[in-house]
Image (cartoon, rainbow, N blue to C red; front, side):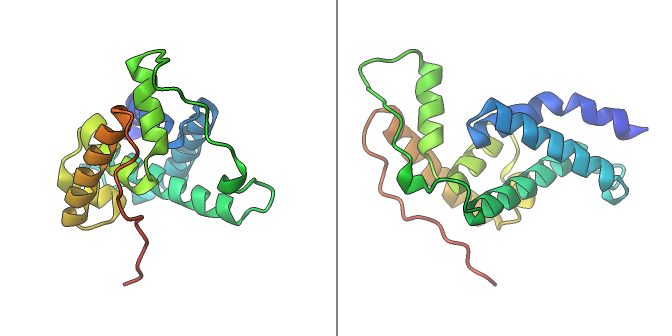
Length: 169
């Protein structure tokens, strides 16, 4: 049974979830929710298709749902109420910390594409399928994400990229 095959993908799911959420505990919750959803929806997976991509699609959809639900939950503080993390460019713990801080400051739409293509090594077409967006959108978001990341890592102000808005088709 390919059910055990899911276990092989847990490290990459956790890595992607950690980079998406910026928090180990939220990442663990997201991975657990993803695996639970996969168990419940197992009949929808088509044997012979890429299990890893299917799991990443489930995770992406869960992440978007959780973000949407979180925004509508009045018990959470508004992002405007939360102070920016103290960050001094001259005091660097490590390059990895700089990268994490830069990723945390990126918009979720740009970060998702960057992580799928650059970290998880999905092709543009695979990333487009996981995110349910056109391949051209993946390419343009990836370009903007790389530019913004360069600016953030070089301790410049974030490149002025227009915020992305979902447009209903």
